[in-house]
Length: 203
Figure 1 (spheres, helix red, strand yellow):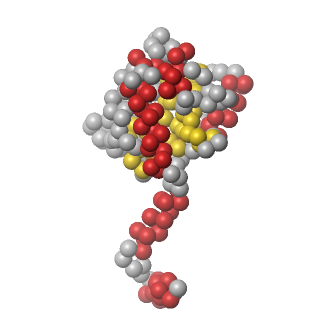
Figure 2 (tube, rainbow, N blue to C red):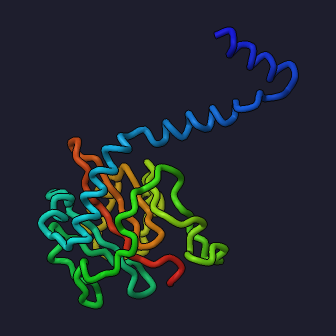
Figure 3 (cartoon, helix red, strand yellow):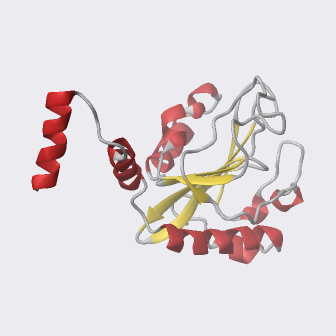
């Protein structure tokens, strides 16, 4: 307690912040923003990516909530296109591709805990349309914030279903080598709620 009082007294009197103080505050802020069982999620995520590598429909379907379903997003034209399914085997892209026909480059990367990559259409990073490369996870509902379904032509019932699923998102995973994955913790189990197959800066 005396140490903390001394620190704040130094700030008030001398107008300086001791070395490492900002780092400690930022570290605690990041910890609160990412307050979840990271190691437990990574084990679940590995099972999920293995189901993709093996094209295992049965195992993949275990990550789809039977009530909410899974929304898969593509953009064949100027607007996002949504496909809702409760079994991955029923999915067909606008080009009639099955889900497992896609290229999932570096899908087995373990997600790093940290800020999500930011899309950079100026391509300052020569190797991708992101400001950094890799696979990252953050306790952030990026999808709900962006509300991309508002730019898609669909009926109000479908939109309400998307909004409901979006409200359940707990974690966002961005793998800059492939796609975006949105997970929700429902009744103590991780479910995949959205897969974003769109390519950044391609519109």
